Length: 159
Image (cartoon, rainbow, N blue to C red):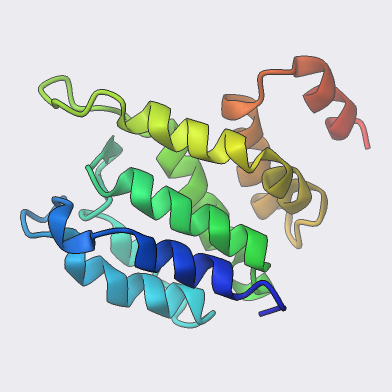
């Protein structure tokens, strides 16, 4: 991690995880340990272990916006190449996630999208610097959802 490595940890600390409901039925407090593993650059598969906690199938859970904010801060810190594919997959799942029609949290997807829009240049950086076609594809799909300027997106795609 680089000189800005504290951003994701600060974002992780900012949230009251115990007060956020998790997709597994408990509080999201236990997600903190998984997110710490991800932020340390370790454990291939840690990102996918968030399934059924942050997303249940493709339905967003109340922890999604907080996790999205941590993921964006992790992008700002600089992703280890080994994590790029999984983290960009998670980011795509968060902005493309569905909202349960019975949910009182109809704004979960909008909150995730806004968080990503707030850090849009980080996604462009991930897109342009992707180490694999699959990672570039995930970043492109994220941009396709959150970018409001189709001319800018077309310009970067042409590079």
